Length: 263
Ligand SMILES: N[C@@H](CCC(=O)N[C@@H](CS)C(=O)NCC(=O)O)C(=O)O
Image 1: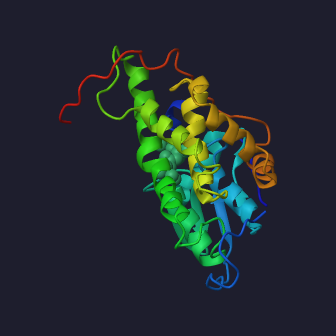
Image 2 (image 1 turned 90 degrees about the vertical axis):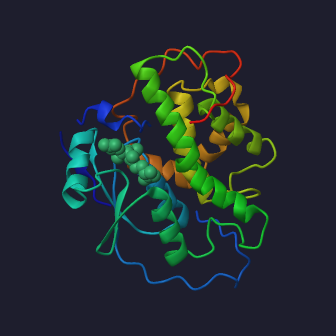
């Protein structure tokens, strides 16, 4: 593992960021794994790139990790160099191909190099739920939570949005965990890896009241106890959070939603 040390990107630029293999397919049903080229993870501490580090630790696959400890700007510099059109973390190289979007990176790595791992069997009832959470994490959860955070920073709202807001997207996850132990359904899956970052962002930055979501808190305790999570944290966040974003002073104002209106 290569870790580069050095000089800090303003946390504000990163607003929208904060913070052993488990086979799930029955033996013999998954296609053979492809030969894996070198995988390099360009990382920012406490940001979404930790998903890929955690994935690789869960799968027991080798990778090179690049970041400058305690230095977000220094970690961003090689990302800008390799990926000037979309300089975000994670940026990952698989062989000589440069990739962004953590969900796509995770699905590529699993489908090629660890087929059947961290994914419920295709025909199982858990499969579509797993896939839903894989996409929900960025498509519905992170997008609303980060939008609400940014709006609050500009002008605290005086009433709740009539549209689906942060509280509702987190509540939906809470409701699922009241009936299932994992976002993979009956077993831990890559969907749990996708969901951890935006749920942590929502509660740690006080965008929602963490006390309203005990199932999510209990799930977080279980994911953080996983050896692969601990190994990933030790490598990817060795000295604790860097460039903390300010937490909101209050949650969404109480009271009923306004009736829905056209967007
Ligand atoms: N949907 C993308 C989001 C990537 C992203 O926005 N990453 C943040 C770090 S958590 C970033 O690099 N932000 C830099 C910026 O927005 O300038 C993913 O899931 O990979």
